Length: 137
Image (cartoon, rainbow, N blue to C red; front, side):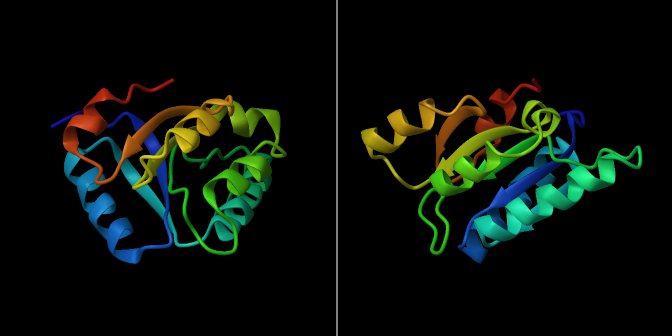
């Protein structure tokens, strides 16, 4: 079992079953003690904005790793990334984004590479092997 690498990770996927499976996979890997789960990108952005405010109190509870699905209603993964770009510089440096998606579209892969904070593109499902390959930034 891997040692704890991250204070927290975040899952953003509109599919609750995918979130549950991915959460169990992350728990089994032991890479973090805290998992924030969101079924919508908009609520995840609001959560990050609120966490920025907490940092001003001396507590940094931001996730170091964000697993982001692309295909979601209301706000998709790329729209999330556009909003993420507007967050504080310190937040963007602290959080690495991993696209975790069922999309195998080369256009999506290429588009994700245009975002500085996207560190990896992984096809679902999340595996222990994928988690082992993720290195803290």
